[in-house]
Image (cartoon, rainbow, N blue to C red; front, top):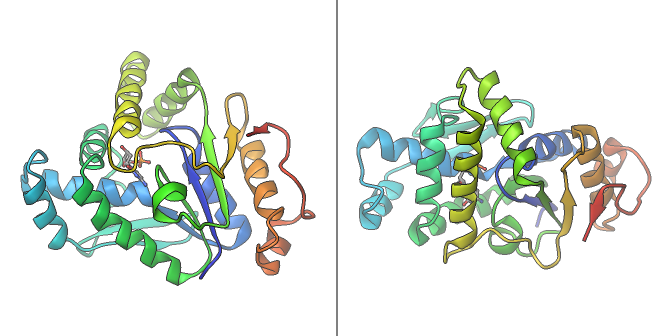
Length: 244
Ligand code: DC
């Protein structure tokens, strides 16, 4: 079984940037599991399937091909053979993905796809339930968190850069609502895995976040030696800014 690093946490805690950079440094695959939920959401929206009809959504999953490809810097998500990497990054898709992610049938279908990705090699995966449900035996589990204001500002800037400006209050409200849904759903709710290292990224920059994650990976005796060489630095305990 390949070496797995899971990075879970709420929206805009810095998971994507950190997971991509850590995967690139280690030479591992980068697995963006949220992209799978988003691609399914796009399909549901485009085909007019009712998100409130779990049986129809499950039929839709059975007829859908989802895949991830590319390098950490150029990751792609495929929906029925079409590259939807850009199309899934809209507020409407975020909202639909969050609604679908609360359904047990959706989670079961997508968990299978995620587990199969481990056969492709060592990976850094990011999501909400990777350490708790998808890869409970992962070698390294990280839970990234940050306070709501910090996360809202990050998402606000990200949307602005994508040319989708939205008032900060609205961004904050949407984050709160979707995180609440992720935390409260009955199936695979968002919560820190018991054996995770918790990294609070409030006030941390991206370099510090990546170093904090790599320090935890390096400290794991099962980390492949070639990855250790690529990531640089000695095997060490977690760096500054980590707790838990
Ligand atoms: O990380 P993201 O914003 O791209 O995720 C989109 C939605 O999918 C979000 O509402 C949470 C959900 N999700 C999930 O429930 N489990 C995962 N492993 C990944 C994402």
